[in-house]
Length: 308
Image (cartoon, rainbow, N blue to C red; front, side, top):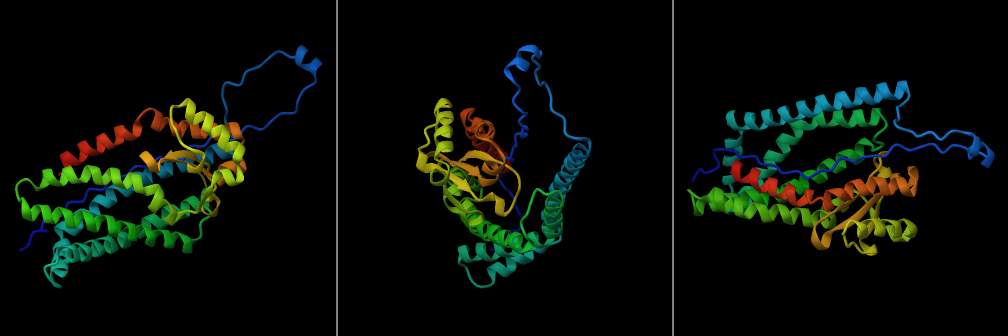
């Protein structure tokens, strides 16, 4: 029975872009007499040097354009696979080995991921080259391709389970499958958020206990989390070796419930003081304090309901 004629592609993402705090250059300490005779001044703004400002502006505009192009191109790929009959051919190939629905879903998703990744590869590689050119990334191409393959493997597992569950529900309830799929999809998204720091993140970066190398920073972060009403024990605070891939800074909270943890990039510790690190972390922690995660899950639930 041919049931995968329409191709539905619904992808949910939770991403918090790294935010960096501009480092301040400490000035030489004036003598007490100079302090008494010099009027107090207050810094009200900070401006990059002209050359760096022009470079930052160019990067900002380029990334904005690439974001638009990437989104439109992604939709064009999916629509092309659907209306050119390629998705239907993938369906026929998946059904050929037998009637096992899980195997069918595995073959179909594998073919779909390989095709979309290959078509998206030139644009993704160009964006990585831009990050390398502007000094934001130091990741070599071998490591980059390795992460790409790992991402495909993670996607293969997740979307195979999703496709298998969806097609099973379509067969069992041709009229209300979309509602039952939605009921299953919401807890599935929450589950992915829960396991991401435990299972998925370690596939792409190395982590170690932050208390091992920076116990004083852990104590300072604990004061910030307690002030924000978050209870995160010291053993759930980690150092991520981001310097192997990027030069940017970040410190944030991730996970959900028992998997909730603090992550500080080693680049942040290398380039920022403790107060600056706490500033970056405090901003990211605000997403949790202000319930942005819960709001995001609720928004995703609404979007999935409309989509299905």
